Image 1 (cartoon, one colour):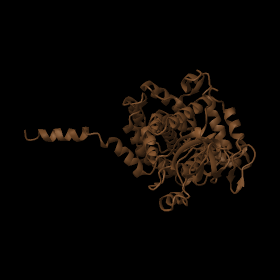
Image 2: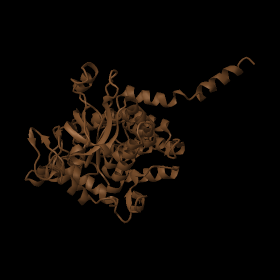
Image 3: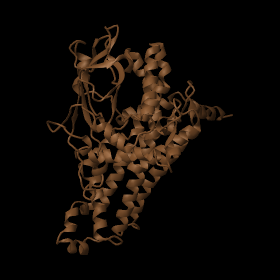
Image 4: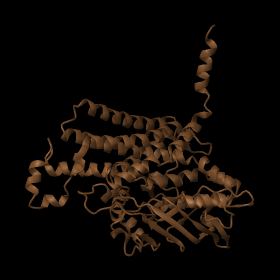
Amino acid sequence: MPVKSGKQYIERIDAQTVPCWYKGELVTGKRSEHFAFAGLMETQAKLYDLQSDPHLIDTMTYASPADGKPVGMSFLPPTSVDDLRRRREAMNIWSGTHHGFLGRSPDYMNTAIMAFYTGADILEEVSPQYAENLRNYYAYCRDNDITLSHAFIQPHASKISGQLDATEDAIAAKVVDRTEEGLIINGAFMMATQAATSDEILVYPSPSPAPFDEENPFAFAFAVPNDLPGISLICRDTYAAESNFNYPLSSRYEEMDNIVIFDHVLVPHERIFFAGNEEMSGRLFSGSHFHIHAGHQVVCRYIAKTEFVLGTIQLLADTLDQAAETHVIEKTARVLAGLETLKALALAAEAGAMEDGRGFIIPAPKPLMAANLLFPKLYPEMIEILQLLGSSGVIMVPQEEEFHSNIAPHLDTYLRGTDMVSQERTALFRLIWELGAGSFGGRQTQFERFFFGNSITVSNRMYSAVFADQSYRQLVRNFIAKTGK
């Protein structure tokens, strides 16, 4: 089938039968009608509808090599710089629609499975069947517009157990049995964002070492439908709300994070990308250039989010009559500099694109790694600017209901801004509250700080990308060699 509509997306998720626990109770009924998921699903439905918009279809889709039907542009494996540009333009439209607040918008995982597909040749060394499984799964996702979540991170207890306990006793995610039909998997995974609102889950944990085993039961990667027998989802508390006025962000963009439990889940052989080979776990991840391809999608989201927060800062300064204040100018300029830097890095990544040795093109790593280092520091700084400018005015903010009550005339008199009526000004301050002080905003800040790992991990990734480059060292050597001559 070609790209799916928003209606089809909602129907698929509503048809799922996976046990999903929220506040100690099983979620029953349609997920799209549950307050914890409804706003997000409505937003993502709009994203999917954009792919079929007559004015956008040429930008948002390309012809599937399987049947020529339109499929999502974010699935496109780039073989030219123009392909990178086309991908960016499509991803910019989705990012601009959700203003960068959906860290797991569908194009993120579409890009992820595309990246692994480009590295499928690496699996040929272990098993031609594994390589074929990965290629087939990518084509399945592309041609059926599968909404993916991922499960990479294990609970701390699982990681420690995998390192310290005997293999048979360890609670780390592992293969516990092999059958004619497939592998039996036990384990738990944290931070499967949007698992409850996705079709399938890509599972790819960092394996614990198993030096005395011929095959490492902790090393594997596979993808399965969410509702295979033995899979359960556990939800954190939701920050979602029904009122777009009172909670303008969480009512639209609240992504549920899930713990995913695998309790003796049978994973069919055709869905396994590798198993037992600890070395292959690292090689496929790095050799597919996952962080580079994903970074290309992520920088589009960074730009959209920075533009949105910048606009919020500017509106706040206007309504407070502070736009000409020196300290406001200085703070705003820092955000502007960050935004222009992110835009330049996105273009530089494409301008410096290179071949990956397998017939595909990857964006230049250095600009994208730089963006990954920049934004986790820029985003909290932008939020702090809103907190400082908003001051105590962010705390005492009426709700929508007051504007429909007998007290409304007083609000109209006392809460108006310089160029805003009271209701518009209050809506702005409610937005700032959600960004800077509410639960949704707190989760967003924490999410951005650790999106691609902690600062040391991201720094090491950047350092590794440039360590082998001798050009800067040689520049200085050449200069030194000329001195005294």
